[in-house]
Image (cartoon, rainbow over all chains, first blue to last red; front, top):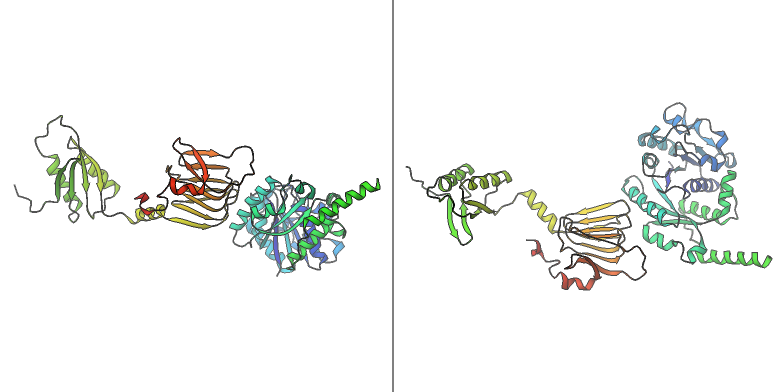
Length: 267
Length: 227
């Protein structure tokens, strides 16, 4: 029996879908059987980030309405043998096409076969959010070091804490720019963690390569050298229960500075 | 006429008007009847005599609001008598519970997050933070052991004596009774630690050191303050 983890944020555009794709891929690399579920009905894009867009035949709404079996609708990611599957969202309906009861049943079914079911939650706190959370056992809240994103994360944590079937949510801080934090132009990690007072699962530095990789349909985790990739892999290991220390931001700053210095010296 | 053996109503004159001690063992109907006989049907009230206030002491009798109203109306019919107060030794369980709610300090270990509202009837002792967008409301005082970054409303039923105290005072808004104050638009880095807010003599909310509270509100935690 696997675990279902919902990845949510409240605010849009903070990196829920990218995080879902990368954590799913990282868990698959670590040898787990993973199923990703896109619940953003009407605005799906987890399939695009994973590069599986062209292979979708059936979707979540088809499964819920009984037009096909779950197995038929799942899209296999051939890069990972039998380890990574995607249940895509429908693009033609909207969030009201599914209700929380149906989602719960569906996730229960997927948990029987997979070690991890990662649920990509749409932005907002309405029906789409309720659908996504209905079947989850655990929750990961993604935020960026912006006041508005932290505010929404706080709201969503409040809602998640009220859900009795969900364990206390854990936090991922995405898109940290160390130089801005250093200058005091950006909220720092400690400040955010103190404010939200939930367990920190990991931090991911802002990296252009993440966007590049997403656009190519190859999650950044596949590139073993990128900082974001290492961060995602570490988070995946923490989800598995390993204790992986957080790399201090200072070191990364040094790295960044030496990089800049290198660039200058080259010129 | 048959003489009454026992009087249910004892009338005493005081300098504040009349005090009526009503027997608490007879039936309510008997009581009404006797009041009617002795106050309303009495002769010799001058048409323009001044109003006299009446204090009712009903002993161990519980009067419903309807009954109280009925008594007031009955006595008012006597032209120059007005019920000023009704005093009873007993209150209903619901009233007692409400009273306890208002009296007690509720200790709540929790973080009040954005969009959440925490509402208590008496004093609130919050063991945790109020995050921006979160609201705490109390009938009495609010004491926050963590940081207040959201909205706090003390004495919401109109008690301006109520205070708000927090270990870290960085609120979006403070409200005490019907007075409101908001944070300045600029952000300050000064330490807002261990502070309290109260309504001063100019009807303004003032934030000051926590230590001043014992001088400003010496009765803060004493039981008798609301009795």
